Each structure stands twice: as C-alpha cells, then as structure tokens.
Amino acid sequence: MYAVEDDPYCYPGSTVLRNAFDIRDGQVLEDLESELTTARADEPFPEGALDEAHFRAVHFHLFQDLYEWAGETRTVRLSKGESHFCYPEHIDDQLVTLFGGLNSDNHLKDLTRDGFAKKAAAFLTTLNVIHTFREGNGRAQLSFLLLLSENAGRPLDLAHMDPAAMLEAMIASFFGDERSLTKILYDMIV
Image (cartoon, rainbow, N blue to C red; front, side, top):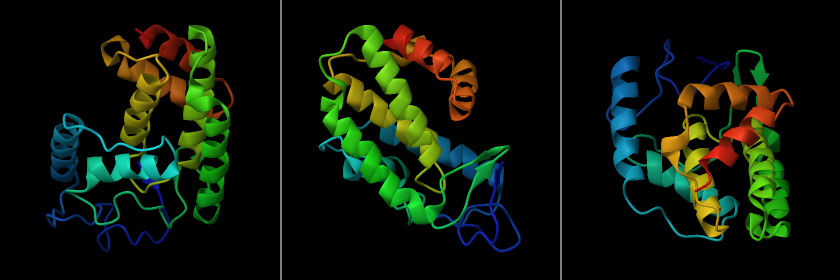
C-alpha cells in the first residue's frame, strides 16, 4: 500500500483512486485495472523516440480507460514501505536527466548481453525511484523496457521472469543493489 498525505487522486476518506467507472471498492478497481491494462498491453504500443514523452505515452496507453491523469506526472509525494520516491517537484527534471543519458547511451544498442543487462537494470532502477505516476509505474516501466530492449536488439521474454523475484530485485535495487535485477534481465534476454 502506498502512503500519501492529502491524496487528491483518491475518493475522500478512502485509498481508492478516483476512476472513470466511479468504482469505490478497492479490490473491484484493482481487478478491473488488471483486466483493462492487460487488454491494452495486448494492443500495439505507441511508437516514439524512447524518450520521456514516449514513456508517458506508454503509461497513457495502459491506463487511459481508468484514470484521467494517465500519462501525467503525479503531484503528490509518495512512498511505499521504507521507499520514498522522487518528490513531484523534481520528477520532470529527473526524467530529462535519465532519458538524456539513455539517448547518450544510444538507447542501449550495440552492447554485449551483459552490458545491456547492467545498463538496463540501472535505467530501470532510476526510473522506478523517480516513480513518475500516481499508479501503474511498474507496468509502464516494464512495458517501456520491453520496447527499449526490442529496439536495442536484446528482446526480453517475460516467460523467463518470476514476478516475485522481480519485485524483490526492484526493492533491492532501490536501496543500491542492482545485482539481482541485472541477473533477472540477463536471463530474460532471448
């Protein structure tokens, strides 16, 4: 569960996100969100320059059916457990820096398998720490990473990913240890 103070994204007195269907039950919303984003993930993703705008377009693509703020920078401070994500007033600058670095790294093209896994893990870690959106960061990040890996000639196979291990690796990377995440990405490269 995310911790947020004075969350305008939620219905008053609840932790349920305001949504296009006016669903007030958290579990019902979570189930519908999963169903709708899975359906959107099966559709072609928007094309783009693998930049910040493209990342936002991926989030919008996945969540457009549910949230009017899909693809937009969150405006509230957000934490999960001991993980405190980037303050909203710094998100846009941090994204410019991150995606500028990705561009400088030629979008991770022409790297060895090991080099790609290391650079992709570092990119994904920073993108997660920024945590651009109020909800759906993990799905947008993974979807964007799939586009990035395909473009770099290092496509990833999600069938080789253990979701629980990936979550543990993302948490460890948040606190500076990218080894598990790098290994998971390395093993996913087809």
